[in-house]
Image (cartoon, rainbow, N blue to C red; front, side, top):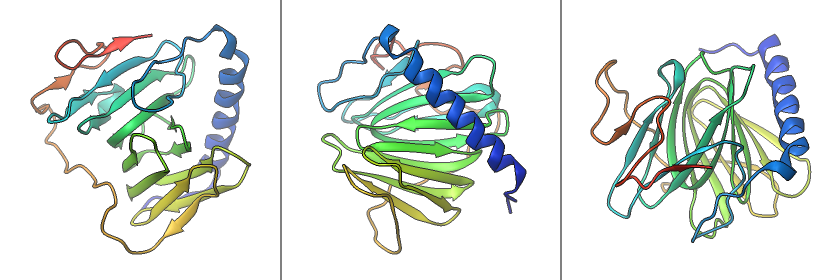
Length: 208
């Protein structure tokens, strides 16, 4: 079981730094264009898109991975001088994050999710009326796109961020995004994108 103590303060500090950096450099960033829904900006991000009948797996640093589910777009970048990542999602992704990455700030058109090392599944479908989050291990902090209310959820819990609403913990239901089963080390699934490489056709990936 994960223990939360002083590291949470470090995560909060990292989050504040990353948020400030994001705001300060916003004028120099290029927006990631989408056909489906507004998509957050990720400086120097690598984008991976999946079609209606495919899933793409991205090998991230430190043994972490992201599984981009069908009809989705996932953009990510590593923060300089810190063990953290910024990412943006339109669609659905399953994430396995290791201790090599202190945290990931995942942005959507309806709100942000700060993720510590652990396993997660996040959905923000086209139009994104709400972000749905499943936590298998670790801790997720949810924040809506309007207001400053935050909510933390832990292993075995589900959370929801309504667009222009307040994050909430939800008990029950059967339509939550599913966690990805573990994969044996050294055996990336078919269709994987190697660490540090931009996706190429047919994954339709590109960097901004």
